[in-house]
Image 1 (cartoon, rainbow, N blue to C red):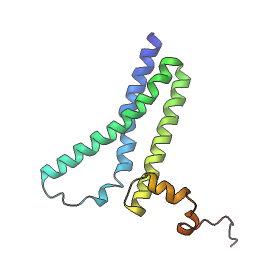
Image 2: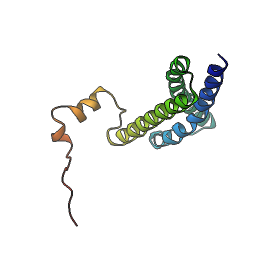
Image 3: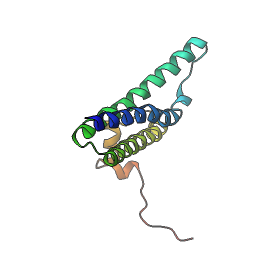
Length: 132
């Protein structure tokens, strides 16, 4: 039981520190926010952004907890935290690029555009490498 508590502590600190790269990626969304004229507006936006991305990081921690309770192994816990963190940071980065293009986050409509039958009419993918 002591090992599980130690792994949960490690996971909690990982959750706290994983919020930092999420916030760094979140700065890509800030260029679309207008109308921040007063200190109150700026403080609200700052606290809302911080709490939103801490909540996303909390979701990662909640995914981590069952793995640690079932398999209390430190090496396995680090692999799980690294995997969860990499996937979430990659998805958020991808979402920021999609938001740059379409001004909407990844949703079923965007997934239908990318993976649907008419994807070749919207996107052009080149499979051949050009020689220089």
